[in-house]
Length: 355
Image (cartoon, rainbow, N blue to C red; front, side, top):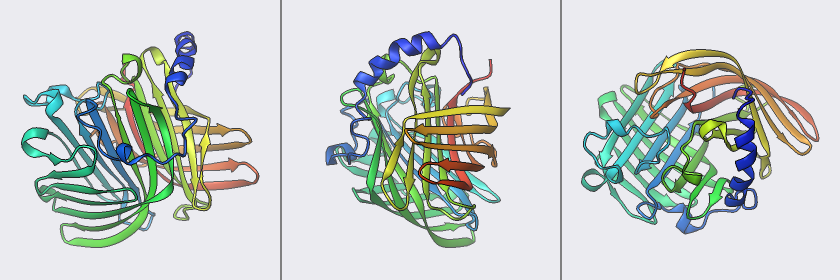
C-alpha cells in the first residue's frame, strides 16, 4: 500500500510465474462446481469460508463477518500459539464480528475438529454445538449463530446470485472465489430484535499450506464498498483486494465491480495510497499500522473507480495478525458515463506491522 523501490525486482521476476499458475483471469465469472462449493478439508490442509454482510445507514449495524477456518494456512490468519495443545490439523478457528452503530460483539477461538465440530467433507455442513450451524449448497445456505455470553442470537438465509468472481484459481495449489448474494437476517441482541435483508458475500478458499510457491502472505487487504449516488442508496458492490508475499512480491492487486443491473466486471488493477496511519495492538498484542485515511483506485480498460475513504470504527483485532473495520467513502466512477458514488464499506487487513 506504499510505493516501493527495492521490491520491484523480485516482484517483476515472479509475477509472470504466478500468473501461469493462477487461472482466475480466464475463469473469472465461472460458477464453482459442486465439488468446489463443498468443503475441501482434509483433502487440503486448510479450508476457509467467510460470510460478509453490509447494512444500510438506518440499520443498527454496520457489518457482519463470520469466518470458519479448518486447519492452519501458514498465513497471518493463524495464531498457532493459541492452539492450546491442539494439533494444527485438528484446529477449527471460528471468528465473528458484528459491528453495531453503538456497540460491537466479537468472538475468536480455536476448537477441536475431532472433539467439537461435526462436518461433512465435500459438502457445506458444519455443526459446532449450540453456537454454530451452517448448511446448504449453491444457491442457498442457512446459518444459525449463537453467542449466549453476549446475549446474541442470529439466523441467516443466504441466497446466491448468478455471478461469481475467482480471485485465485490454481487447482491442487490454492483457490479462492467470491459469491455475490442477498441475506435475510433475523436477530436478537439482549432485549432488542429485528429482521433485515441486505447485500452479502460468501467467500470460499482452500489450498496447500503457505500458499503459492511455499510463500506466506506478507500483506492481505480486502475492502467491500456499497455503490450508490449517496449513502444508503445501493446500486451494487465494489471489492478491492491487495495481497503481497515476502519482500513485497505481488500476488494479487485487483478489484471487481458488481452492479445490481448487469454482471460483475473484473478490474485489472487496484492501487492504494495511505494518507494517514494510526497504531493499534493486534490480537497478539503487537503494534500494527492501520490506515485511518486512504485513496483507492481500481483500473480496467476504459473504466476507472477512484475513492477516498476514512475509517469510521475502531479496528477489531479478531484476525490472527490483523483487524476488521468499517469506513465511509466518497468517489467517482468513470466509464461510458461518469457518476459520483458514496457510502459505507467494510475492510480487513493482515500484516503491515510497525518496525
